[in-house]
Image 1 (cartoon, rainbow, N blue to C red):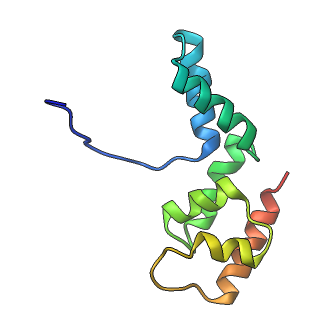
Image 2 (tube, rainbow, N blue to C red; image 1 turned 180 degrees about the vertical axis):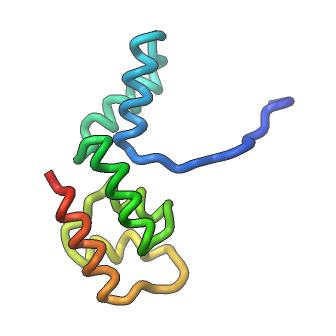
Image 3 (cartoon, rainbow, N blue to C red; image 1 turned 60 degrees about the vertical axis):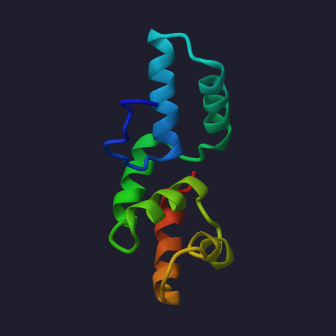
Length: 110
């Protein structure tokens, strides 16, 4: 595509995507793909947007923003689930850090 270039990307949580699509649906008719995305995020969102934003902020003290967002989207229950999120990342987190992350996630679980 001529003249099209990605200037900036910023990862967002599933709940924020849901809010964006719902706002857009009030003004415009959503495309087929957008409707599918809205249906998908509606089924997968596990916490409210306000809680998700707070959770990501807390998790950013321990992990990178992209990791914090993945954790907020998936809401892992145990260490095995949490290790799967970090499986592709270089380096490793200490067991104490992982347990602290799980404690933070448990505070926001609904």
